[in-house]
Length: 142
Image 1 (cartoon, rainbow, N blue to C red):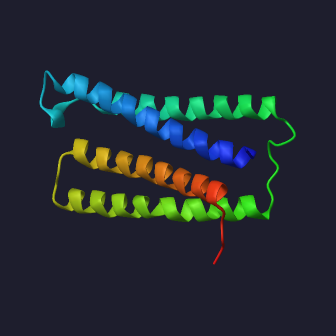
Image 2 (image 1 turned 60 degrees about the horizontal axis):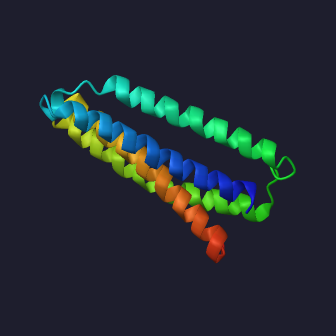
């Protein structure tokens, strides 16, 4: 497995894990208060920060364990990376438009922030899945 494929696995797993932790914390607090009134900012920032830190740490461990592969990218790796990023960007656009419409309708900040966070998570997951599938089943650039 190439370093870039390992990276796609790491990013997808980090996105799923961090969002799962975020949901567990928010829903745990929501048991005692209305969902839109839950203090979401600190859990959101901590899970994003934790995801970034964990991703960096795991990338470092993978890079140290196989230093010959870390940083080597061929043309196929670059094309798969670009393909995955383009696929994942669709959720960012959808989330941005949804957040814009929610702001225009004057929804509460809780919902706007959460739809943006969900869009980032879905973008990371979809992009990672697209990259992994391209590595596993082959990639045919158009």
